Amino acid sequence: MITDKTSSPTGLLHSMGQSLWLDNITRKLLTSGTLKQYITELSVTGLTSNPTIFDHAISKYDFYDTAIRTAHDGGTTSPESIFFSLAIEDLQGAADLFRPVYDKTLGVDGFVSLEVSPLLAYDTAGTLAAAKELFSRAKRPNLFIKIPGTTEGLPAIEEAIFSGIPVNVTLLFSPQQYLAAAQAYTRGIQRRIAAKLNPRVASVASVFISRWDKAIMGKGPEALRNKLGVAVGYKIYKAYRDLLGGEEWKKLLAQGATPQRLLWASTGTKDPSAPDTFYITALAAPDTVNTMPEETLLAFANHGKIGSPMTTDVTEADKIIQQAAQAGFTVDKLAAQLQKEGAESFVKSWNDLLKVVGQKSSALAAAS
Image (cartoon, rainbow, N blue to C red; front, side):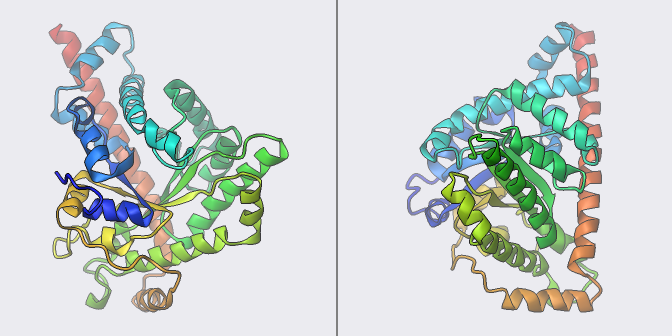
């Protein structure tokens, strides 16, 4: 571990103004003190979770067994109900560790994230109901509810924000998808101001990066290898800066609103030939968040390099996107495909997770 965090790669990135979040949560991270160590030594100020993370933790290790058995013995037999009880308990513990960051930053940073069931990705009413229930159960102000930025998810995002529920908008890939999510957030804030409610309801817009490069790997020209994801990221970063610099958001800021922050997700390197910290270095930018897989965080802490921060100059990004279009990969079409595939992947992970929870619950009940 790095002990002088002010001069470490993670410390320098944090000093630049980018929040480092961990894309992982397990009970062992909490009980072993590892998460606390990441906060203290690696400048980690938040984390995200998803069904795949919990699936691996529950299936491979036994540190959830007691809680699963207790839930079953108490009459909770639904795998989904058992899972949410486990996840909420973990995220409450993590939220408490990040609470000093949340308080110090006046609610800008220090968040953890809990996802609604991926089965609700195209169900507006179901998503909103689940968001309200989960946020109420968690009883932590620094907990984001993750809602996908699908067409059906956008009204749920607006309503959740209007209801005062912090939202992590997930499954965003393109500038168009990002702006749709940002506009849903903005409408929710505007409605709160009109209703004379506190406009400070936090949100992040999570843009998935490495899936772009994985999608065209081996299909496009070699000159595009590991370039499209960052190029799209630059286009989205410019849209983000333009939005916050516009008259609409200047008025909202003057009325006490806090901007939705841009979050880089899926920043683990998928190409073995690329540096393991490739996307962290490429997407360093103030007033953003980078949520990293644990191995990527540790790799960056060990040997990461920080160059110049991102700018709103998209000249090179436009060239790369044009090359991709000439090779048959248009951004809007591929973004729609990636969002659809991402939602399907989340559903598969969710079903796998519930199967694992159900099997383990039954096995532990039989053993006792």
